Length: 130
Image 1 (cartoon, rainbow, N blue to C red):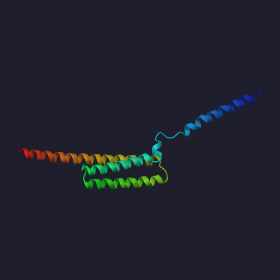
Image 2 (image 1 turned 90 degrees about the vertical axis):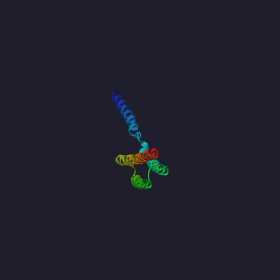
Image 3 (image 1 turned 30 degrees about the vertical axis):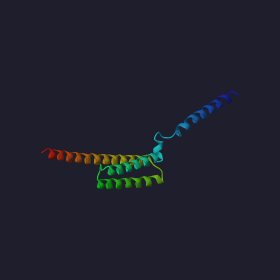
Image 4 (image 1 turned 180 degrees about the vertical axis):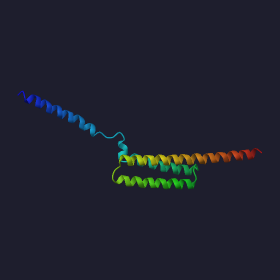
């Protein structure tokens, strides 16, 4: 009896310890939405829509929109190839970086076009005043 008590207590303590550790290891990653790529796919779709809106508002030229659309198409292709086997952390990081690069390119194209328009308008205003 004296031998059984410590053995049972040790067994119960080990079971409780394992029970407390197992759920923690099974907890989803804080970026679980990115593990299946749905959030990345939504960002790519949103970026494609931004390009279309910028072109329709004439914030960017047709040529700029075509170039950006090609880059989005390549990004979608990459997303599909990664999605076949599930996403690794490095693939998620790669996609995030490429999405960021495309967003920056769209913002830069929009700013360039706006500054050209502003300069053109200023020069016309100056000619009109003469």
